[in-house]
Image 1 (cartoon, rainbow, N blue to C red):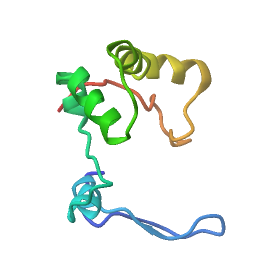
Image 2 (image 1 turned 90 degrees about the vertical axis):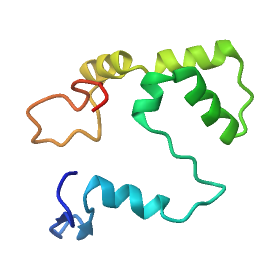
Image 3 (image 1 turned 120 degrees about the vertical axis):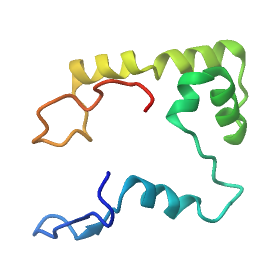
Length: 108
């Protein structure tokens, strides 16, 4: 995620992919504003969860109540995700990783 122009090798089971750095990745889908795009930053979810989740719900045209938002926030909390990974695993975790995918859950 920190390597500019990062790419993967093609194999007999996977195609060659260009990933780029995280900044390149974000730029690729935010460079042209579009009404269907709603950017959500992890830092904002931590700092202002009610406001951030309400804006997501509004963008998705979901009816939201304070109770529904509170449940969504709790169910997507870092602690909940980490516990689920420990219990059931996490598909996106690379097989060679020597630590959990959900490690710290903090901004910065």
